[in-house]
Image (cartoon, rainbow, N blue to C red; front, side):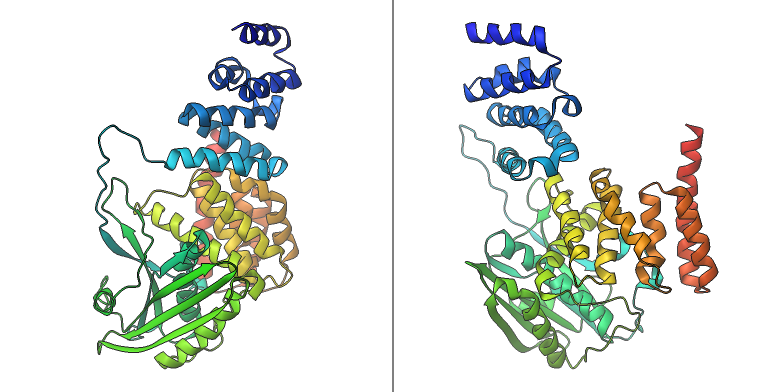
Length: 443
């Protein structure tokens, strides 16, 4: 009590001194006085004035005291203002706090575990398309009688990487087949609807043949082919196995498998794509739109991580599951930023970054603004006529409030193209931007 009274006196005299506030917070936390740290220091703490380290000590106190509301607000403020400064320190503290949120509530009576009740939700590919305001000029058009290939979520064995790849490999394969062959392709995600809140399900075992044939009747169309399988990853090694079904004839066409270093997952997927195309008799050619490009093998893990998070944002936007947490949205934009900064970055990588920024903005977050300089540099550097990213760049300019540049770029692009689909998309974007500008002027 005497020590706490001493710190009260210090704060009365030196509350405006950032270093004094930090010292008091850290001393109290080290002494195990977590509640006192929150009661004395938190009411005085301003992240912009007192810096990140005091906030980090308070976040630790929130974890120990199970102060979820205060902790969430602190974590958000620290990520917004100090993520790059704190780096691994913040990640470690954030993981401890988020583990507290995710931990099941303890009770004297045994907890009732909700039974797993799976449903399969179709995800149209490419998954990033809707976040770009549904640009028809960036989406392949297939005849009504084109075969439909359904890529189901894979089972997984291993750590978080295995679970991420189990969801994102079907998305990546569906995207490849959508752009590069004469078929239509979708992904099928497994959602557990048995609990209080629907969530993506992690599959321990691959789907059976009967389940795969049942998937063929998802939605309004009958899938001609269904692809299931499993990802095993750990210790720097991974194995990807795909089982190929002809749903119309209820036949198993084959089992394809690749094993190798986890860092070679991109190369493994390329060879699996080629073998799968042969098995289905659907040759892979060049993308007629010029949109699709396979990631560099060293960038494949970031591409898969980005597709996984975009899919979760897509399902959250449609009310299927809860939205990704703050750290996961950060990871999405960071993965996309690494893709565009890679030496072999493609136009599709830049479109993915734009989709990630638009998705983050749509969720009400401001996290994407950390990448302001990178985003606008990409827009400025891409002056190639006909470039898909250049054609989509008005959306980037609008998201970052570059209204004058938005209007200039829009008028340039309208003068360059007579494509009705593109002009219609640009007109819709202009109407949306005009509404925002009018509201801003009124305020």
